[in-house]
Image (cartoon, rainbow, N blue to C red; front, top):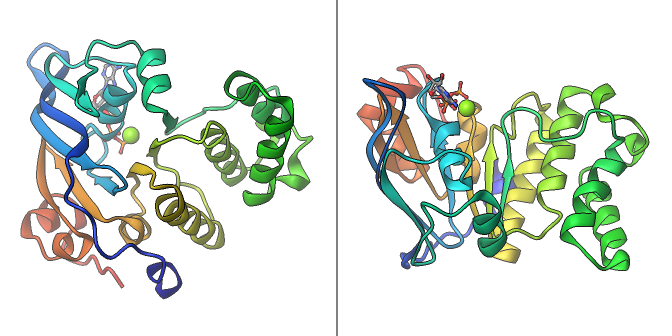
Length: 259
Ligand SMILES: Nc1ncnc2c1ncn2[C@@H]1O[C@H](COP(=O)(O)OP(=O)(O)OP(=O)(O)O)[C@@H](O)[C@H]1O
Ligand SMILES: [Mg+2]
């Protein structure tokens, strides 16, 4: 943990938010609110952790930002622009949003390398840069030994590494990661934590990340929020959050220890 902490940006600017969710309400069924009048601001260059019980609406919140679902009420602002009605391609392209979905995110019948190529061919028109980027990511995510293996035959952890590497092909400015640490072994989690922190410190990426590996998640976050019963019930720095009674009640439970 200390290895990770030395990378942290200690001072987070309280600049104007890059992403604002304003009074968002979301329901899929009548009389069942998933998100109720929820507001959340994310500043540029922040890493925000999104925690909450199963079914709280964390993935839905990410889907609202990517545009794969629309809120019933409320607005989503990115960089001062109301994007609530923008289609997925328009918002992801304009604001360089990339997404690591909770499940899937790769082509099963393509090899690891061809998965990277398939996305790179859309995002990187220059063949030289494309090749360089793919090789850089294969090295960074230690995928060389499995580059010729079809994705469906990769282990759970390797599939996650592949999807995360694919999410970085277009040099995103906003990265949404839905349970990136799930199914990863401890060393791979540490590798990923370092990568996430470097993305922030070197490229000023804004990252929204959810996971049930709460300890591993909190280590990389500047701020975290807890979503429960359709609302944000607690928010703050990781240290503030673990002392927050609402956070304990709605998510961590009495026996949770940060260290
Ligand atoms: N497209 C959809 N249509 C109908 N119901 C949906 C849809 N997407 C999500 N839901 C419902 O919304 C609620 C929130 O789901 P969501 O996947 O956002 O939760 P989550 O916090 O990501 O949970 P988990 O920790 O298990 O991943 C659940 O009750 C889910 O069944
Ligand atoms: Mg989810």
